[in-house]
Length: 425
Ligand code: NAD
Image 1 (cartoon, rainbow, N blue to C red):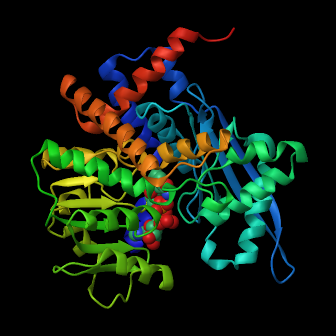
Image 2: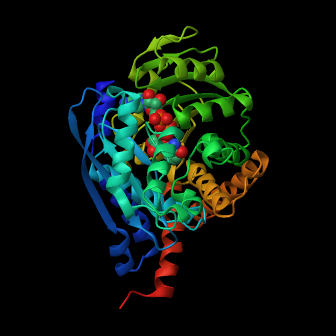
């Protein structure tokens, strides 16, 4: 497990630039536009004091990086994790810009987080940390400016505290009209039906498209999932509905396997109660290398960055990697997967279901509407399948890999808008 955490710490922003340069070279992206898109617009670092339960004051460091808002308000999650640092947040913000561009939604890209191990704090401390961070961000977030959402170790409850704090700082007459300052809220507080499963659902819609394209039967197919949180557990449960068999899972508590199948719903309730998959009865513990070597059809990484690298990509025994996480494969890992003929649905396409349904939540809030679950699912499917087909066409047209094709789709869309608008003054 230490190896895994160590790998994740490499500078992921270098990965973004390497991915970007490859696509920009292929399409001959305008140099000026390339310069703009390779840098972030704003990088906000805040240090803020919070009173702990025992009366002590601790100082926390939080970030919000706003990469680009050419296509719409900045949009991106908030992560609470000890490894959160500026380069990671930069990378995550930049991927958000590409994601919105690929899926054709009117958002830009941003990301934020607090460098913190949330497990070390009580629920009341976490509430005060979240509220004080929101207060420190002040006008740097806003419903038509920059809209946070959940990410690693954050959830609907944290979004509800953020919402309440933001609304408390604006005039009372404006509060009802501003609940779209954050998405991924609990449904009762203005969230959308289907947002909790949206990212996992999007991953599974992409896998279904890949299966159709490759004449592959998902019924009886085997899969493994790394990260059994919001994204991984939903993807696993929805794969189960299609008749696929989950054979191994890895999370921060360790890895488990059962070649006869692990019940994803049962494991999800176990993880909810006990905080991790370690010790799950109907399985055997395995180590990280054994997990990565599991022989199966599909690998869904849904944890952290830099998991599939020059060291680990040679281990994989799968046909498809469907990236639920952001940045799980680095450029060296990409080359090895390509050489080994392992297909890949890249993060900026595969996990875009989250931002798509966040956009639906934002629209519902703006219009004071509540959509039915089947309406949300149906619109999500339409959008992600369209994006998937577009990336496939571009990959064929440019004879390139799917990640580069996804970048090409995003960069071309942004290039058109920059050329239309020009650069002020
Ligand atoms: P989460 O906090 O709900 O779950 C994270 C999971 O990763 C947990 O199961 C945790 O145990 C596991 N994990 C953490 N460190 C690990 C390690 N070192 N080794 C193995 N497992 C580890 O987070 P999430 O929201 O499910 O996000 C997971 C990934 O998906 C992240 O890369 C995130 O940026 C990406 N993502 C999330 C969303 C969303 O809507 N939540 C949308 C798009 C992309």
